[in-house]
Length: 86
Image (cartoon, rainbow, N blue to C red; front, side, top):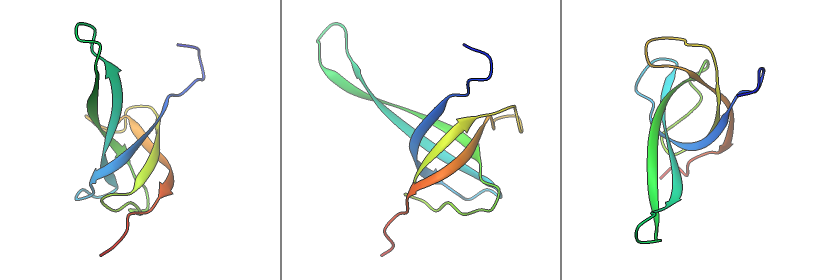
């Protein structure tokens, strides 16, 4: 990986129960080699949300950062789309 390049991912907020932390679920489609079908893979990342702005269901962008805690290595950069409240 090139120096100074930080990965960015888009995902949906899965949980916001922690203080200044959100759990983001990132989904991607991968071609299964044997059957040549597309399947969906998911990964969950803990991201730092400084102002506790994110709510469950928001679509957000996260960026790689230095380790902030045992599990947190991502930071929320922007909220792309707010969740519809019912």
